[in-house]
Image 1 (cartoon, rainbow, N blue to C red):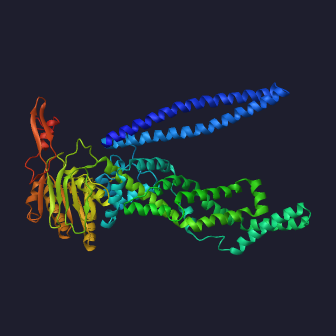
Image 2 (image 1 turned 180 degrees about the vertical axis):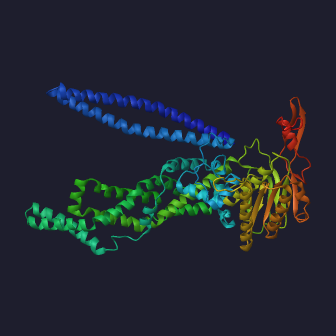
Image 3 (image 1 turned 60 degrees about the vertical axis):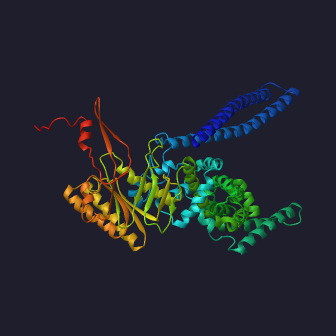
Length: 613
């Protein structure tokens, strides 16, 4: 259903863009003709016509220029609408690429990389970068939106917040027009450097001029007095020297406070123009009437008092008036006669008092809207995915038909999976390439989605609030002098410390360990893994461990806690040799087959004994 919808919208917007392109070409030709006619008329006026003919040529040149100017204005609107349609084509084309999980054709993820304390788990689960959850949720473009989504993926929300986000996601899911219009308006914001702190510090701070009412009233009275004296001097009702004295006072007052006022103007104008880019998106989100409490609350943030877009438009008009200071001659006369800068500061501080305290909340509301819209797009694209139940009373991660959300639907195999309760662990066995690591990542990435407030790739999912700790992708570091085994130990130590911390705080840790301690011999590894898992069970963490070492299922220290499951492969003979296939179906019990030697055979490395000379 979603594929047909995106294809229909893509084709419709492409047709509209093509029509506008043809219309734009006609306008370009008309502009060229009108400007050429203007140039000919101007040539006649200057070099040839005289008398009445010159007058007619002047009128003709004026008419041609007026036509040219009007065409430029209309053509500009056509070009803007054409670009809008082309952007909507790109938005729907990217939506189709997300359905296909075509990571190479999709734009790369724009989310900032995670901090060091979350980098390992983010890398293990594929949360950021290419072929990641962030790339799948790639409809977020504004800096506040990217910041919000990044935080939601890295920091699990409490159950009450998840319960507030889920209805908002469900309400936004069918609102395709609203979501794509929001993406259209926010796309240009991706290129805007996000450093609004100087502006926000001013907006939320205390007014400078209004804290000095004597200075403000002095400037007001001097402005009235100066203009009155100008009129009186022209009418010869006052001596010129009195006007000169007041102008000197104005000049001295401007010089005394000029640096302070210029600093204020710079703090405001340095980011106000970029802030204006947000106005249209804020206006879009303030208009609808939402039924879910979370969306309604966000919309109220944008309409508390004067609506955000109108407030920003008012601020922009006032900043434009203050920009007279950039014209040296004009500013000199305005400032000397009226003390212009003082009145502009007064107007800006009125906005500061009325709306400044809302500015940061406007940005935060836009960011939350974008993050919710990204999760809603995932819901719209995958209507068979479930909204999970995250409750403090749950004792396990229990999923029905759990799949990996980053795999295309045609290749995805779903399985029922249970991890927990706290006195057990899931032991995943199976041969190489059978699906063990993918299962662990499926558990982890769906836990992230669930606690972000989004849908999960499952028919149903129940889980408690979880903290995540993983050891799946381990890298050594030649630069830091860290071997593979030491890197594994450091990661395991971090997981154990996280489990201890979670236990002391009454939280539940979900650990996912994939073939840990590969950097040591099998005997020591078996003992070490038993110790680690036994400790994690003792502090009531829940988790899954994948391994090739089937002896772990028989270890006395873990036998009562172990819940073994496995994947299986099938090897059949073929014309070119044995053929190995996987069904990726999870089965109860310990794996009964291995495939390392068979894989060697498939690679042409299994025939005959090795000979060393």
